Structures are given as C-alpha cells and as structure tokens.
Image (tube, rainbow, N blue to C red; front, side, top):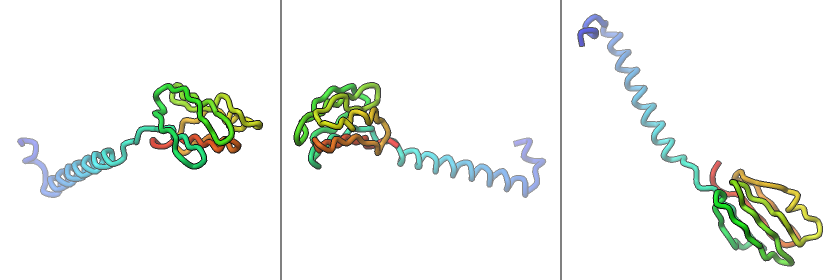
Length: 121
C-alpha cells in the first residue's frame, strides 16, 4: 500500500480499469472454452441412408460392411478411417484413402455405403 500513496487519482483509476478488463477477459475465456469443447470424433457408417454403426475414430476397429449389393472392409487405425477392400467394380472408395477430419467422407456408390467423420473440428 505504500507504493499506492504516490499515485495520482487518474493512475489509480487506470489500474482499476486494467484489473477489471483482465478479470472480464478471464471470465469470457473460461465461458468460451467450456462452451466449445470438441465433441468426440466418430465414424458414422450408413448403408442405403440408414445408420448401421457409429464408431470411435480413436479406437482401432476392423469391420465388414454389408452394403446394398456387396461388402466393404472398413479399417479404423491410428485415428484414421479407410476402406481397404470393396466388392464394387470401380473401387473409388478404396482409392479415396484415409480420412480423419470432421466432414470428410468415403462413398461406395454401388454398395450404397457412406462413411463419414463427425464431431471434433
């Protein structure tokens, strides 16, 4: 308190204003962080428009998907999902490669299979 005696009224008000701004920004940061936590990333598998599986992207999984006219082999490993084998003639779904970001998808049109990443950023 000894140091505050030498401050003018304007300097004291400035210090109070700075402290208030810091407190408010800390509160807003805490509220923003709590409201914007990332949802867990999931791999959603649909066949002919119906969800058949919802899987954790960060849990290694090996799954055969029975599509409309054939099968697709889905592998989730190290935070990536991909179709490794498919019974369709063009194999576009296999050539799509690995996906891991929210909104990315793999489509096997002949088998009517869609694999989508949801949640996260």
